Length: 543
Image (spheres, rainbow, N blue to C red):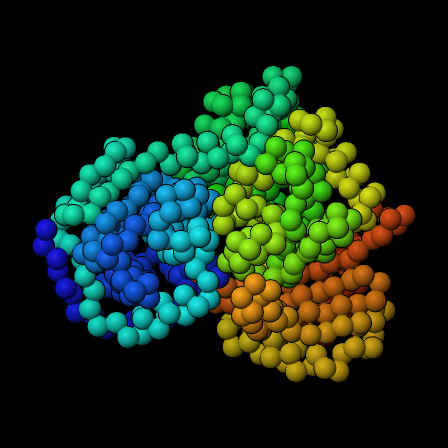
């Protein structure tokens, strides 16, 4: 085995974000770009010698060539073993599970999540640590520092490794183990949920449509829902992963999963509609005529988790990202357990999960998960919903309605202003930040500002502090607006405006969401002078 030492120089802009390093695919394909980042990751870990890793991705364009590069570089850097999903396929939660199950030193997950795929679209590389979760900020900072100091990388000169055949091969002294991407994950799901009850649900005529969006969850959903749980063949649609996701946008929300939404709002709707995203960590839940917001889904799953075998003993606590609605906080209060508000990014839940402070976590961006892995998990959320439906024997709409009657309703929506010029986006945020100290007590569109701050997070486990995590405006009467710049895009800037209006028990739960949020939307847009700074008020995407 010939190890090549290739001279290189630092490449600007290789700072991993909340979900790893994401760029346009063609950027990753430029000379040394991928290799620099992989070597920098090994260097930040103190080297790869003697270590074991997991590698896989969502099947998007450039997935397989990237895996071959990582294998060759891992071997050159002295790794003893790499576990790879067959054909390079591994959902993000399944990769997290394999890292934990095999006690590896971490893993490389190749995905740009819900972003489109293809040679002209997006690609990403994320390193997950040995707990199965996204690299903590300390490690991503070390990786970034290594990208700025790199002078060479090591790689083996060899033919491609066969990724189609399950089993072990060798790359020099390094073992390459190709595994069935679904098998271990399915065993885990069978331990968590009452598969017998869900089988009976389907046997009794329960109908479902699961849209895998031509992304990684297709093989998992087909194996578990159709082959194991007995859902009729055809329950899973768009189930074959494609490099360009069928030229679709694999983001499970009412905009990008419109065919599913149209079906679920029609007279032909099945009992349950669900979808997952590019790498399988997000989910959408829809009942007949009843879309469930991710914030509500988190709260409802937490309130009913005890109906599934894995959670029958109760929850240790619930965590949510700061922009997510406060619905789950009220569940935690009623259950008498801890509730935690973290910055956006699943990595912030890792310490809470590892310390046993929380059992279930969620984000408004359609991610929910539990302590079974250290990632959000789209199919897990769908299976927990199925378990709850099987036990309660009610419809999705009935369960949601009863939840609101018990806890109140959080009207909630997110506005995405995409491809904003970076200077304009930064100017809006800077000027709004400067206004915060003087806003409390002022009235806008009939709403009085009750709080205004920039969210900073003190980790209760390790004492670390994460600053500048979003600008928050609270209003009397239960309204809230949050402003953030997104870290998941690959060009320009995305301003995200999160709007929330709480309706307590006895108030109107039947309003149109956008009507319920009209005042807080106008107040937020007025306070930040949105029209002046970015020249528009209408968002590109409303979810």
